[in-house]
Amino acid sequence: MFKPIRAVLAAALLTIATYGVAAEMAGGHPDTYVVKRGDTLWDIAGKFLRRPWLWPEIWQANPQIKNPHLIYPGDVISLAYLNRVAVQEGPRSEAPINTIPLSDVEGFLKDLRVVDEFEQLPYVAGLEDDRLRTAEGQVAYVHGLADAQPGQRYMVVRATQTYASIDPTRCCGTEGRRAADLDFRGRANIGVERLWGYQIPHGGGEFLGHELMRQNTGTITRPVEGRAEVSTLLLDQGGREVRVGDRLIPIEAQPYDLQFIPHPPAQEIEYGKAKVLAVADMLTTGGPRDVVALSVGARDGVDNGTVFSAWRPGSNVADVVTRGAEHENKVLRSKDGIQLPDEFASHLMVFRTFDKVSYALVMDATKPTRLGYELKHPDAAY
View 1 (cartoon, one colour):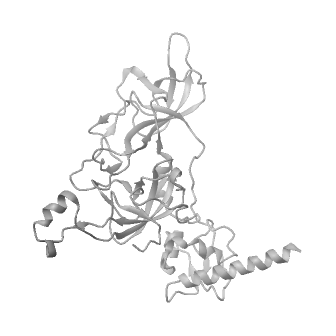
View 2 (cartoon, rainbow, N blue to C red):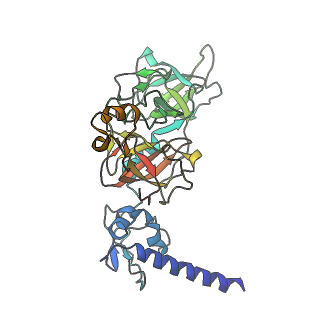
View 3 (cartoon, rainbow, N blue to C red):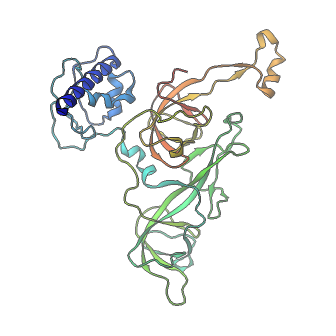
């Protein structure tokens, strides 16, 4: 009795999805598309949909595709939604394509995490031969692992910076400065390698978390015993050098996603709260395939695959036409001027989520994405 009803509902939903996707199609699209090496699912949708972040609807209108994350170069995908043709499989000699190139975000998935505190974590108390730095094949002596047993593996991490919310009235001009790396006490340590270009919000803001970066990994070879008060950790991975004060966390079995389904934010976020906090490898700006850090996370309903649009906040300009040139100085002091609209810059997709911070990849852009840019629904009109 219920099976025919389900079948009718499924057919109706497919019809609705088909017409919905057809309405989103850009003009002049072909009936089929051959997947090419180097494509991403976002790229394919960007060629044929007005809103590329809606690419899952292509697969919804192609029910013969059993797994949208197993699309291969050479596959022929139907784009004739009202008169579909069967998808043709290509050779399976290459890896399937993904929503985004994992090579663009691999380091941010494996090497970084954001935590509320790190001071309670076990730490490197000394190094072999009393070195100042040590690396693969050498040992570090760890305090705070009294129960560790030989064979247990740990990741050596270091606090690199602290995130705080951005004051929209004071961010983000050129008068700011870049954040320094942190030492084991969480204090600034100038003159070390920087992953992010980051502008400290003047006067601070709400604390959002400490970022920890992987330095190396190691295996416990000797527990606490005898006169020694430390466990011995043999570093076994080529990576960054380890120093006294670095912290240890247990190695997790892939604590991150490798596949992403784009979708809008699950809940509305108050204007001014969701902003771009940092841009990787840049001073203040980033473009397509650059990684950015955002001031929202799981507590705000953000999860992996969430898509935002990034907007340049509208300026507040002096009304020199009706109020005279002297009004310009007043505006600089009080913001009592004419408010200009926000300007669209790019689409971002979240690929790693923490409680109050998340990492996202710039997917497409009409202008550079800068620190302090406002985040909105991907379809926001203004």
